[in-house]
Image (cartoon, rainbow, N blue to C red; front, side, top):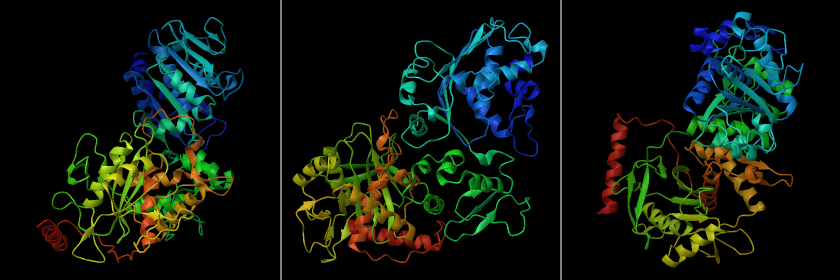
Length: 587
């Protein structure tokens, strides 16, 4: 008993039985000992730590990974061995919580475990085996007289879990709870430890918001961690269709129909995909891909392939110093507690980059913390994104002088007069905070901006014909063309994006019923995560910069595929050229 109290995993593996009528795998049984897999051991320790150290956890998982069982066994162990504890279980409806004779209900699973423990272990602390004593077991209630602990259950409503107190709460299938935002907000005072479990149903849910909240600890349980499901694991390259078998010891049948879609797969996964019959079902039940549940407009396989190929950590992070009145650039500063800039190209001189043909795309926010103002700095000559900016608390009037400073920091040689320099091209959305930003910029002055005709979106970036209206006009037709144009540039390699966060944001766009591309979280009623880290502001800024590049018709230079190593002679020559350019720029 003392060993069981001290080591919950010893108790589970030594004494707990499980029931799974849909068991799979060579060593799985319908009824038998609950022997945990290594990934379940790791997950259990994360959940136990949440109870001990009092913090929330969100579990996003593939189907049939045993997450619900682990949460129930954790509560059962704590109530069985820890004195004066109360635990609360919530699910989508009353039958899912407690229904007599229904193996899918959560309390049925608790009863099953207790009824199969040795009598000497349960004596005096719960029901005798096979009995349902009302003194210890009532509807949605399980009491333990020896420890004076209790496990209670409730169906999910807007009032579920409100009013009482608990050491920990387990909210099962949280993605299917109708009152999800209300349950999350109103249970904050009930317990310091809430465990939210579910599979994604899209991105307009409180469950999805939790998985994007940096303040909440995440626990992912993907099917590739399951030893039976991972047998014969293989992966393919999306574009070349080349297949690599990762499980070297697995023997595939001759002429096995490998699926070359860029994802990690296995024979088990291939079979499940065929049985589910839709990409949306696969995204929900297997891939832990909430964006895939919304009818994505961007190709998931393409995005994943580009992330593996192009995305990398930035060379440096920091901020910019500038005159807030004139927009005069002073310098870039590296590091800091909250760096807003990321750059993938080295700095020279006072903190600028080698002169090229730069564009800056901007997606403006109001600076109130709900969404981020984002910028994309693009080298239009090479098609490479060299930097990005994100901040949810910068006001439009403060963005204006910063953009002017950035534009002159990323200056270009004038095509008409090579001895002269001009600032980077600028494009932004004209509505809302974008209009406020431009009003301030116009007063200070900035000579190189995207302009459009009032009646159309046609633009002339070469300056031969200046239309009256500056900025990009967002509407459903223009935005659809904007994002389709951006995806085509990504697919063709015209736009190279090293930012993983920005690439993942492309998956949040979906096709609506009118055949237009829109943001999938437009239906999300609330956002309790502060600044939305994954709200597609980066993707929109990237798409705007891409529009400038394509309409300006910049000819791409041939890029070397070979990476120049820092210890090589070629790298030292490259740095020498950069220093020479720096000298010409600042002398």
